[in-house]
Length: 186
Ligand SMILES: [Zn+2]
Image 1 (cartoon, helix red, strand yellow):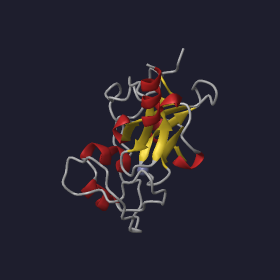
Image 2 (cartoon, rainbow, N blue to C red; image 1 turned 90 degrees about the vertical axis):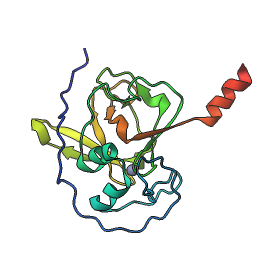
Image 3 (cartoon, rainbow, N blue to C red; image 1 turned 120 degrees about the horizontal axis):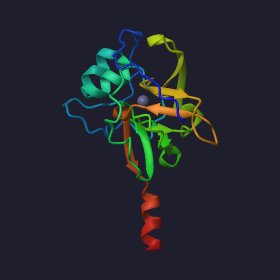
Image 4 (tube, helix red, strand yellow; image 1 turned 45 degrees about the vertical axis):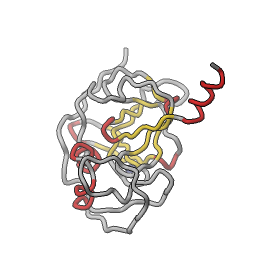
């Protein structure tokens, strides 16, 4: 039986330090509810994004900001990606960094989108998290350090890992090649 993990539903703020801007001025492909463009968002640029939370707050939708920059946690079973089976790639909703491929997604039953492997070693960074009386490993975006969720060692083969990710901080793009293969075969 899969161990059910109680994730804190509280927003933990104040953990982020102050960062100075390095000036990533890349094309904006983000569909944001507010008017200000997210200049850091790029699915092709791999350069690190370093911005203050004040700057992030201006360009990110409120729900993305709360999780990405204040290490919040979305309520379980609320993500559109929790029971989502399209073939494609998941990106960081804050900066566009490629994070996971759909073929590493699995049904964990934990209430959050779950993957057993990131797209590459550099796509994710890890940090020990001892908040809420638990010893967990936090996972963050390797490009912009957005909080994504946690990784646990009760996942399926081949890695045995379960990356438990807040769907709010994920963007999804369907695989064009996969769609074309399907068309050719049918
Ligand atoms: Zn990011």
